[in-house]
Length: 367
Image (cartoon, rainbow, N blue to C red; front, side, top):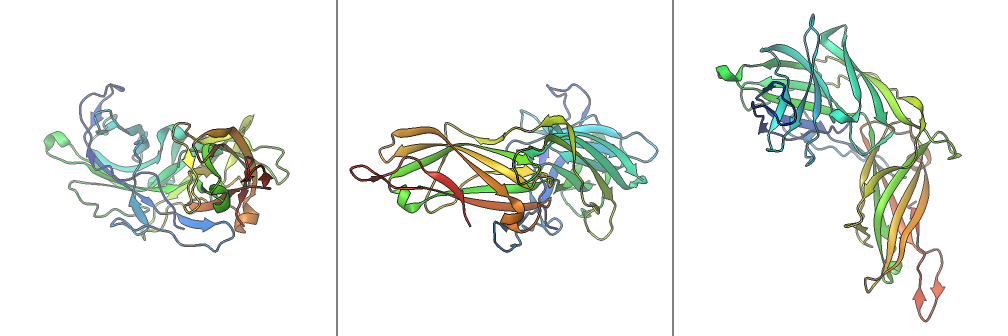
């Protein structure tokens, strides 16, 4: 299955000096990460393969995220307690690995972003054979594309030779003795991605401009849309070492609801200063991430209406759309797939003044 991970090109020197935000020992490493590409669906359309290849294993691309999320990592070795640490991006534009691993051979496992959940690790028989990561506190709907490491390699030169999905061997070297740590990581998704695309009806666009300021999403237990899902979920990811480049995630992930708190609307887009200004010729909109437990959603859109002179004539309008994924796509959501939903802002009736005019547009999902 084509999936996308959440890291990317970070071939940046990690400083060996003390961090301002963490005074524990650090080590020098250059880091480069690759991610798998999504496969894409559009509502009521046939599946379209949508994978981006790179010189890394087929189906991966370099990660590009200007927020530079920290990576939670486990340096594991059979017979020893795992070293739990993180790789993070400093204010000086350098990547650092906190808690220097001893010079040794390890199996490297981990996830991104580090603040997305609580994660513990255990050996899958032995760490050389794989690992089991128990992940709790995941948001049912998230603005973060949570991924796990599905391949790792540390070389002594700028080469990703030997980097392969399903292989986690990592040799840490002593930089003070002339060794170099060029760390390469492969990531894979835990969530499905929902891409919301908006357009304005061409006729209505001649009269009004629409600017979307906020988008919120809520998931429900069934198609009555009365009982929201729990706010948090947990899952267990079993990684099994592979030798043929196949995914180490060999079992379907099961997400279990946590706690007693049912979710409210999750805000996944908000920009009042630079809202999404709709076009009649171009689809525009953001993406959020959901676990496969979700199938029934309500999308709430907050927008302003402007006349063609730039005057705001209706502010903070809200529209709600019920989304049934099985009806829209003919299947349940799968992790690592990108599902595109398209909406058109259009009038429900024509309001006659001295000329044709309308100030109460609605938003409908396209058939």
